[in-house]
Length: 350
Ligand SMILES: Cc1ncc(COP(=O)(O)O)c(C=O)c1O
Image 1 (tube, rainbow, N blue to C red):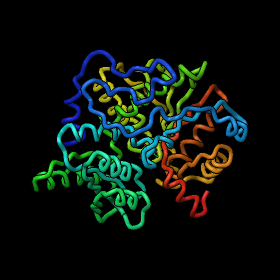
Image 2 (image 1 turned 30 degrees about the vertical axis):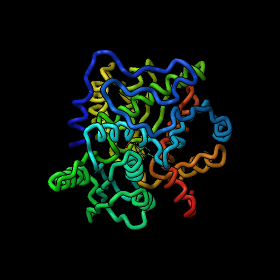
Image 3 (image 1 turned 90 degrees about the vertical axis):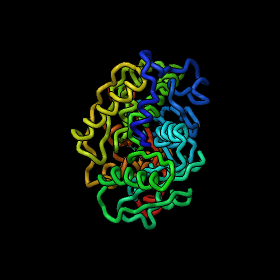
Image 4 (image 1 turned 90 degrees about the horizontal axis):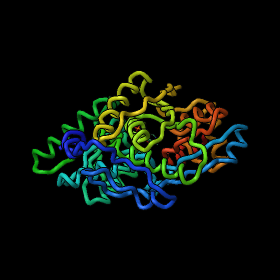
């Protein structure tokens, strides 16, 4: 059983788009119904807030700046990763799984989110982790939420997805019913979570704003969040340019992966073809480290607006969003990583 194969087959593949914008300010809460045929295990408190950041605009000397607050998503400190997990855990339950198998590294926000989501659904969770898991706050949280950590014993990140499949096969051979999901939950099915977020945003924009954003900016790791957004925006009637800020892979490599995932997600939804994003390189000093300029932007956001931005995703993407102000409203999608943000602040940064 895997997060891609059987779940894709469950889509139904109808012709009409199943992603619909809500019609009024309250209609996004509770969550929009899942697209036909896709089981969803509700975890998030939706819609996440959308607001204008006027103090931050004043501090930056530019605007308008809108914030979409997935850091306030209301399940653990799991941020954007709650959105794919609603569909991945839904599929795991639908397939009669008893253990959710996935993985990541010491800094993974997906790992604790998956651990908590699995536990909330009554599933066990096994996490294949590269690198040194000892004392890494996200993995400590995952273990506290009941997950079993399976260290790979080396620093090869790319091997994790294969080892997740191998671990699932071993569990199956032992009579268990595993549901395997690659790092970050970035499958076409996981991306449906962010396609639904596009519909949620369309409803909020219609209710709250006269003018749609001129640009949406978000950080990109494994690509599922951006892919879902690109599939969901046209389905929700929003033709807004999207800037993906790549923090771990070269833009050309992640662009190919995002295109593929976005196409598969749009097919799963039976919606129109996905938008094509701009992707910029924000790997800077390396995965997990922000530049002094990005740290300075994160500090400004903390001081002006009380935003907690981490050094792997948030500081990089927010700095890129701030750079684009001045040509119409920019919407910065705050994807969470609150635990690492607090971790770096309490260690003396930014
Ligand atoms: C806080 C945060 N923001 C953004 C991302 C990137 O999302 P994706 O992996 O879907 O590209 C991640 C990935 O783990 C994340 O933890």
